[in-house]
Image (cartoon, rainbow, N blue to C red; front, side, top):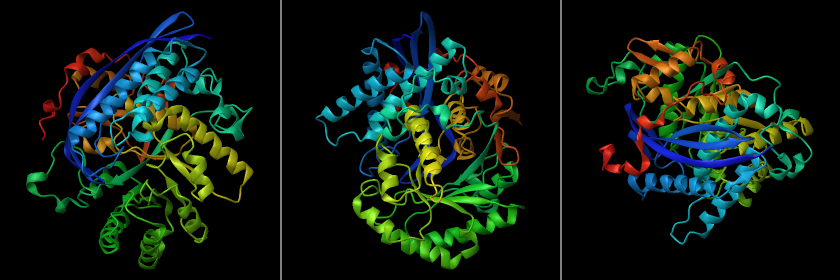
Length: 485
């Protein structure tokens, strides 16, 4: 095989939330949504692939001292750098080989920057992932393959041993399900500003678009059974909020339910989190039995330290924990597992090939050490259509993940933030994943589940050709167009 990158372009479309969206230290009402397009030639056949993502401030760095404009500028910088580096690759033997070269060049560039503070791996790799996603999309279109077919025939050329040496001599098909999942349980995140019941919504803040607004209304509307609960680091406040959340869940979920707990990097050491956990167990002993795992309780600066490994070893009955924001490099998961964590999350914005290798490593280790629990979760709060959500679901279906944080749809009025033609394309090609609800075309969640058949049958999640020319070329976009300070 020969694959050659012919060029790329970037476009932006500003999108507004239907209500304030608070995650961690940021509250979002408007954000740029970026589309990356890559043109390739595969064995003489030309094709174009696309990827997309919002540019949410504070997730990649969580620096409270920087402005929204500064954070977005950094994200655009790493994306543009990745596109420049992709232009220099020339011809490679596989998409995986292209990605390896791109990742290596971006890493050298990021580490050589003289500006301070330095870009962390989670940020500079974000640029790589957009090109990587668009490259995979273009490859699948050129070859007439779905993502699942490309992965299971290893047409992508993945060499697992170069990422995790213990997997040398193996292929993804040795570890991943033989068929992609056709449904995914939607795990609903309860935002830190989200009203829990309808009567908590002020008249001036009420949204009248036919979609649920309060947490209780979401449970009823989508028949939710899985939840993600964020905690803020203050034991008394967190327990009081949890009491209200539990009351809503038990009042509106008729059957079994489960939840994950997002520590949100709020704890400075294991001792602080353990104090919260002990208080939680003492206050809500039956509720904690439904816990699936705890996500990233410690700040990324300390989460992978030797001191944390020592503290985890001294806490044998601890709850299962995974990393998320600490998963910045290719070595993060093996490091975390050695320290005592159970696993990590998959997000397309952290990398497709990296996520595949991590899934294979976790399956391999579970077979080798069946008495220990290993976990790969699906987490991505802001993923939305018409591209990013569909590609993320295609990957999760192929990796066999059975439930994932799916919440982007909750904070936007369906696809109404995009042109009518785009909305109709999504509905026409993905009628199982989207449906018309009153005047909106919105994500369909039935009995707490999302249907995945259309995304698994598409080349790489997206079953139509999206014309990005209808959006603003990056070189013409300005931060001022967002209308925020």
